[in-house]
Structure formats: C-alpha cells, structure tokens
Length: 181
Image (cartoon, rainbow, N blue to C red; front, top):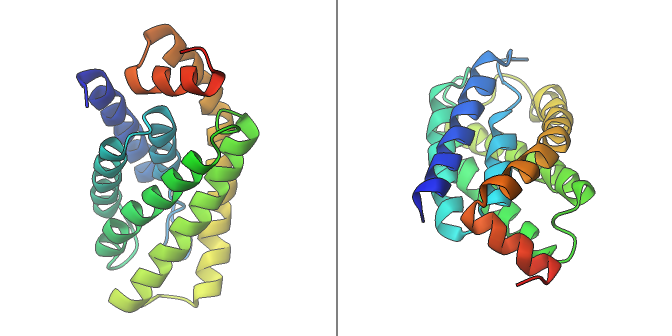
C-alpha cells in the first residue's frame, strides 16, 4: 500500500464523513452517503488490504456520526461485510467493471446489502425504533437511489483524475482490463 493510495482513501473517507454528517435522518436513520465514497475507493484501489482498511475506517467514522440509537456497533459490523461483498462482485465483473452501468448497479446492490446488514445487526444489538420494512423503505431505498446517482456522477470524474495522476492500483487494473499491459 503506497502513500498515494492512502491519501486517496483518506480523502474519500473524509468526504464521506461530511456527506454522512450533513445528511438528514428519516425515522432516526440516515441514508448512508458514506457508502458511495467507500465503493468509489474500492473501485479505484481494488486491493484487499485497501478494501479492509477503508471498510474499518468507514465503519468507525459512520458509527461516530450516526443518528441511529445504538448504531455505532452495527455500522462497524456492516461496513466490512458490505465492502467484501462489493469487492467480490466487482472482481467477478472483470470484463464489465469499468462500465458506468455496472458501477451504478454494483452501487445499488452494495447499498441494499449494507442497509439490510445494518438493520439486521441493529435489530439484534439495539432494537429498531420502527419496523424493519418501514426503516428499509424510508432510509435504505432512498440511500440506494442517492448513492447510485452520486456514483454515476463521481465515477467518470474519478476516472479522469486517475488517468492524470497515475494512481498506482487503479492504473494497473485499468491497463489489465483493457489489455494494454
């Protein structure tokens, strides 16, 4: 893991904290905009060490900024699970993973998984302030739409930045997927 990668991951986590902090809560649960930044970090630096580091940091930061009663531990449980599932799906889409459509679909799937795992963990750890279905409909589905829109906008921007800065891991992955190594 090099310094450039760590700086990129730190910037994405910082942006995610700001988005997560300013997002209003619905039924005492915030749509998790930090997920979009975590997913972007996984896409840009698809290395297991980076994925786990980003997942742990994102889990702690979203736990600190959550408005959900007892939501700190569920956030720290949910982020590594979501990151690993997202990373696995991203790797499985080897041929199509640089497509904006596949990135949007992966973001939507990842957000649905994240919300389900979070609500499930919160149910067992702290209890839910409303029925699971109501929380899922009020927070997870809007977060899915928001995260997908954010990712569809940010991914092309991030790709152009990566091409200009020659970010180590992303450059290698992009060259491998296009066959130019």
